[in-house]
Image (tube, rainbow, N blue to C red):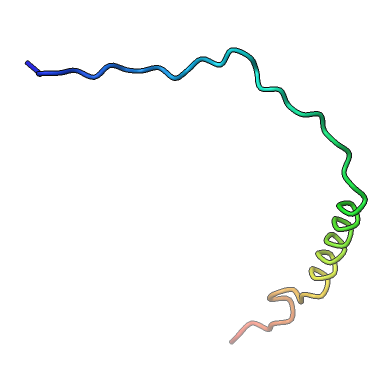
Length: 59
């Protein structure tokens, strides 16, 4: 017979749901940064050569 036992302690019960703050509109600076990042990503994809397109098979 064991000399002691463990009791399961349940976590505290949440009484009220967490209030979510209202979404604020994005600022002008954030929108500008997003546009620059998107254009830069497009440009880097266009500048990269396609892998395997210009290579000739060995043989």
